[in-house]
Amino acid sequence: MSSKQYSADVILIGAGIMSATLATLLKELAPDLKIAVYEKLDQAGEESSNEWNNAGTGHSALCELNYTKENPDGSIDTSKATTVNEQFRVTKQFWAHLVHQNLLQNPENFIKPLPHMSMVRGEDSVHFLKKRFAALSDNPLFEGMEFSEDPETLMEWFPLIMQDRTSTEPIAATKIDSGTDVNFGALTRKLFKHLEETDVEVNYGHTVDDISQMDDGTWEVNVHSDEKIEYRTARFVFIGAGGGALPLLQKTGIPESKHLGGFPVSGLFMVCNNPDVIEQHHAKVYSKAAVGAPPMSVPHLDTRFIEDKKTLLFGPFAGFSPKFLKTGSNMDLFGSVKPYNVLTMLASGAKNIPLTKYLVEQLMLSKEQRMEELRTFIPNAKSEDWDLVVAGQRVQVIKDTEGGGKGTLQFGTELISSSDGSIAALLGASPGASTAVPIMLEILEKCFPQEFEEWEPKIKEMIPSYGKSLKDNPELLHEINEMTAEALGLVENTVQKA
Image (cartoon, one colour):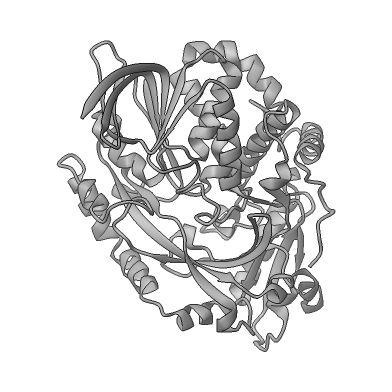
């Protein structure tokens, strides 16, 4: 084997949407930075960012019921929904900027307008949805949302769900036409194509084995490809390797990596193979998660656009696998248990026995049992019209928290950075990709504090709402809606009908 020494200003590990976003932001703000990317697979966006491995919802809390919790007093907490919605609008503004600068072409290849709907069944759930609708109605971020429990209206909204429905239980839905379907795999590949046309060094088929901090504060990254080992150094490293980020973060030895663990969740989707059925549905319809199910397992019937073809997916069906990546190893989970996090992991295991049982039960479902779940959405669904597809792996963060105690399982996205700002990692799952831009801006603010002050005017130029609340600035919100809709081809309220 041979070894060679190189250096870069910034090293990004993983060629997914997060690294693509961070590299693109950095090249816009500091074009002279020397950036190197290492990806173990053959091309960009093949793991968590791949279009077959995520829901592609463009998470903006328009339909995801888990972003609006019911308080003990019966009121609805809309704070997370507002935050997620504003974050996705920040992301869309950056995409619009890239389109305006001709750095991102043909946005219709990765984002399309699509109604977002929430559908619930049963008296209690209908009551909850009605309260949720009332709580969001005065929020300008959710302008245009409609509520109905009228069967004829619901038949217009989602005929595939209402056809042949014989149950007498109450059913209700909300609909908003300003939702989107996002192909994050296609977007990731577009961004890396642009980055490679600049002087960003993108290395596929390269696996990072180790990361260690040098005496001068820079980081040495041990990379191997085929029979070659390279030792690269950089003053800043970002670990954006999806589920593989936790083991790499542990190798850094930074204090912030201690008392953290990961809980892997696998998934399956049902994919429709009948074009006639696919054409009867044109929306993303989310419902409520089953009791004991993780929030990321919220069932949804999704129109998707993949490889320029309209598709229809239902799921996800959760399951358990010890792998941290779809292309990972069965030893990933066991290898992540260290002396400094073993108590955290054991505490989490004790707390989450019902969840583990649920995931194993999900994994053991037959296709016909999965079809029965699908028939709660599509009463006349035929088994021969649907195939099973393995979705991506997600690794939920386990950490010690004040509110939850030792070994608390976190559902969401976690940014971990060292105290000196020289290294950062992104862990967790949804809303993930949809909030890539605000998350990467947070990294820049934490890890490049001196440069950030200089970059801020440019950031505000690229993202006009940066540092402002769109919820509290309806006029600015309207301007940004028009700008992003025009740039990205999202003419609101003029969507294709089923």
